[in-house]
Image (cartoon, rainbow, N blue to C red; front, side, top):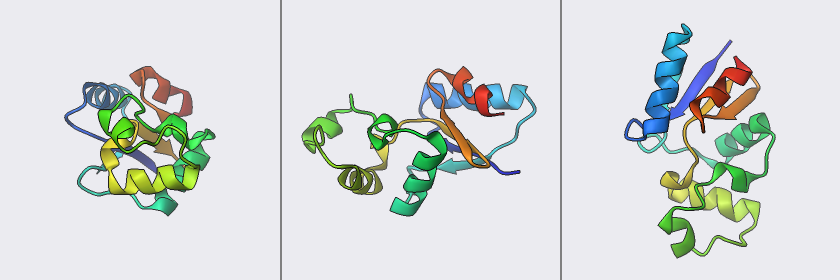
Amino acid sequence: MSTTLYHNPRCSKSRETLKLLHEHGIQPKIVEYLKEPLNVAMLQNIQSALGCAFIEMIRTQEPLFKDLQLENAAEDDLRCAVVDNPALLQRPILVKDHRAAIGRPPENVLSIL
């Protein structure tokens, strides 16, 4: 069984989620998505595991979101925007097998363990 945390070590919620996982004896594979950007297929797989609209995976309050005028963008355009600007991705995201959860709040990830 595979457990992967899409993580930004500079983000407090991401650090709290990793700490919570360690407290539960989980040692996930860490993907620092700002250093290892995701491609469209990976984003589609995460979206499928989350079972949500892609806009729910985006940090819509980021100034970059508004700068890029993504408010009414199609999902394919949003995915491309995240590939090109990984800071737009909501964080952290835990994927375990074929399920996923966004760690906002960090306790959300416990629902898929």
